[in-house]
Length: 165
Image (tube, rainbow, N blue to C red):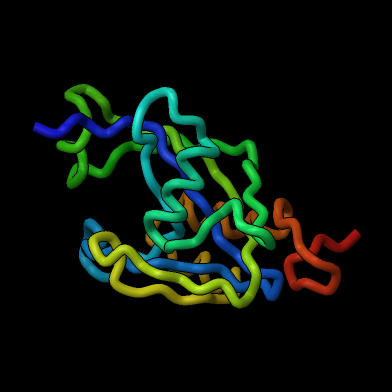
């Protein structure tokens, strides 16, 4: 029997200076049916794996993007969400575990960054304007994180995400 999932995960909002956010369509439908679009998410592999290590690994596994490559900037936004695990996925966790703690990161990538999906997890990817991306997300915490992008994003001058003073 496989080990239970650790109820600590990351949410990584991948974005470009032009204000576009990468969304991935999961291979499984949303719990209520329909498409399940999201940013990169994933649980720690072991309890001692740091949040940053988890974020780097999950981004690479799901998109093929090296979050530590030249031109990329991975930032821990210092935000955490705690949410109830969907009943459809409860069996993946130890008995009595009902909540997951999710750490939020942003990853700025160059506009030319290719995306190579893990076909076991996602069937499609698309870049959307950040506001539109937030509306397309299934998860409320994912939508909220994307809407916070202008506050946390590190962007070049002239970017639609750059904070106005």
